[in-house]
Image (cartoon, rainbow, N blue to C red; front, top):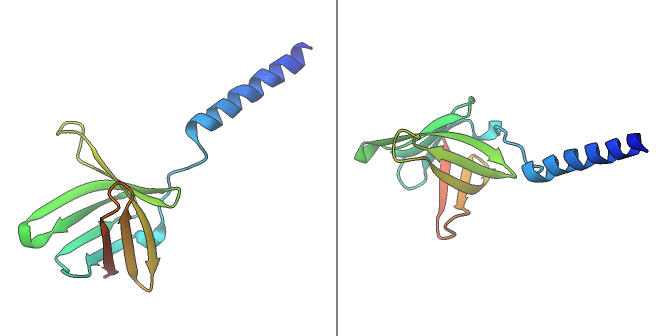
Length: 120
């Protein structure tokens, strides 16, 4: 009887942990690694590094923002900034890659849809 109770409790704990953490897992999608330039102005680009870091820039206005990135549940998640600054800004994008074109569609603002061309 004690053994059955123990197994039931253990199962409940494992199930609870699984539910709390969800079934998603952060990963690096190798298809994103590289430099992607905006279709309308190649001075605006994203660089995704294989270690899960990267940056985006608007060279014509002199801005560069570093970020950490991962793919969770087929969504690109990027965290900008640092805790020592004003905080971390997170962006979540639905994405697809077809024929060297990266399509980013914001899950936070459905009006934002961008296309980027793979450079290298």
